Image (tube, rainbow, N blue to C red; front, side):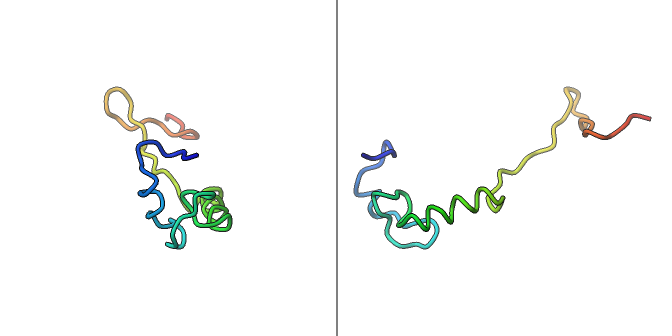
Length: 72
């Protein structure tokens, strides 16, 4: 069973493991082994991979006050 829709079986077999570059194995898609899957999970959990966050702005375009900032 393939969880990637829109990709052929051939495409999945030829994609390398994103951690080590070896050919991916169907059981551990998109990785080549449980070890590489666990390495990737650890990278997410430890913050190595992060989604960048942009500071929010008010409706008028001014920077929003950050928590802890006090108005004088």
